[in-house]
Image: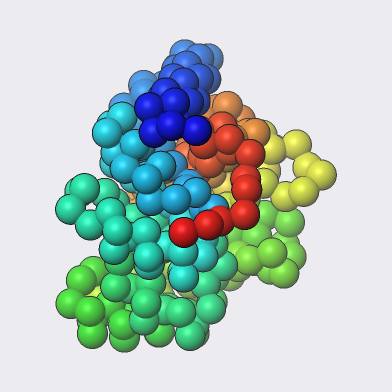
Length: 234
């Protein structure tokens, strides 16, 4: 595939995603400007990220540190905001704090402590979202709903970190709209104590519309933009 063909393919995917977002915003009585589209580029090369930047994308998400760190280096200078959206092991925190502007998967106090330490060492603030396990099962990542407010307090009180809000993935086998409605209520509870923590990161390629209908501010979209995943080759 030529570079021109691939750029056209990505441009077409972006146009389809933007049309879907626009329709969902109309249905929900919301404005497009309320939403941030995060292009999740996992398994795709840095050249795709450069095409996305050329097409106006400013926010890019990754879920594996090894891949994300390399792409962030290759794409330095593009003015991109990098989002780490995968489960984060504490032994990867030092690397992630070096390039990630936002970490979406903060789900335990130990991670807050590690992120605070490494953000201070790196000399750059890191915005953190508390990941919520909407099915109450933290095995797939996320804090139980009853743990979220204490975790939000911990992030807000940690040096080098900024509390951005909450994030969740719709549980498998559950209607996404209902799950995202619960996330919106959790967000409201957090904002009673932390009014500035207004981010609701919810919605992926298959459930963007339901997320928008339930107050999402950030969408994490990969497949609909870039196509079906293939093994990553650098």
